[in-house]
Length: 114
Length: 112
Image (cartoon, rainbow over all chains, first blue to last red; front, side):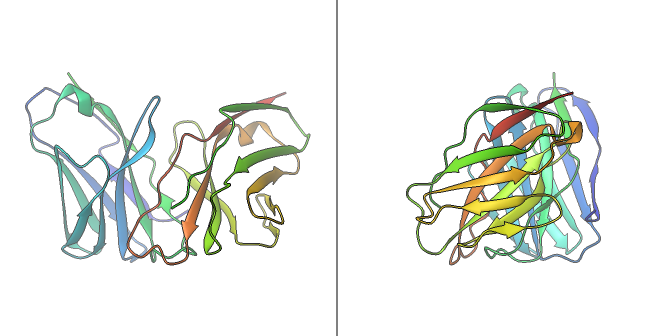
């Protein structure tokens, strides 16, 4: 299994509070991604990174920011959590972004915003 | 990336082969066909990918139609552990920095 650790695994927080989710990899892969998964919507890309300090938005980036100061860590921040951000968040990594390079996913963080 | 169409759900008996279909009628010549699956309470995992020829690995086989407008993921002997959501995704050879986009997939149930 690819070395991907997401923390925390579960979190409950209140509306309006900031939340940071962490993804840590030991594979030295260049590309890292944050997806969210909700019933009826499948997996949707929030943000991704193609190198240290290089990030870009996905299809559902509003309300989220990311940072990547080291190859191994990719942080997802909800500046002011809302109930619509209750979801399961998955981090993924890939060696490259070409057609031939598979994604490897972590086991997810379940976030509940009350 | 071009779009794929998969059945919402399928059912199989344990120890029987399973054929999971995927239609991709707008596929281009440089699109690769990728399959991922997601077991309950886990992140998705890569299964297999191919371009034109059929492909086999330890997890599954991928059969690609001659016109490439459809493909089939084959699990040779379904086990209870194969119950998952299976995603068929097209990935262009020249996709640049564009990440994978997942659809809703096919939910496979395996009956003992």
